[in-house]
Image (cartoon, rainbow, N blue to C red; front, side, top):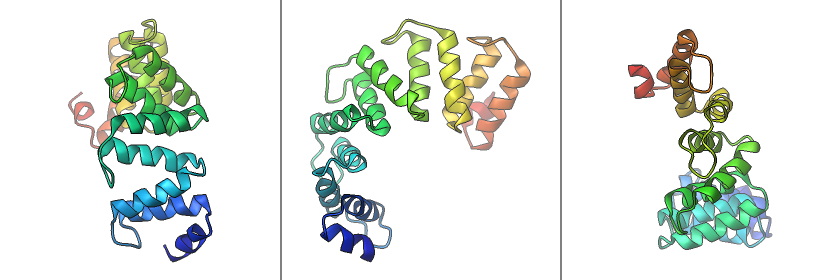
Length: 198
């Protein structure tokens, strides 16, 4: 915290952001959401996308600032348009749920696709859901299974469970109970109750 603070005072955006993370998590300093937001704002003013996104999360949750979903969306959009995967994912969630913007499944799928292509596992899993349900994209169980597989291989537990279900039901993949068991076991070991049940 001492060294981050020194560099932050000199206007170094990465240190301003890291200092904010320390305050946010209470690591090396007392947890202080207001100070975290101050640090994020300083780094965000320099277009530091991690800070822009985490500042958006603060507005989304009302942490250190008054809850403001529209401001969260504005910040997510700013970083998302510059190609930052976490912001693209968060923006996709906002469009999917109609939080701070009108519900728009097509835009949700678009932003989840952007983040998914950048290897963001949670976005890959959400994109799989879009293909499974036909929300914002044409329903396609093969595509759904493909994206569940991608997220599952990155260790995303919910996707491991969903992939297990794909193999159990033969949706988007050839039915294979041994593969279903393998993926359920992986998620179950991480404490995922639905997979423990399966």
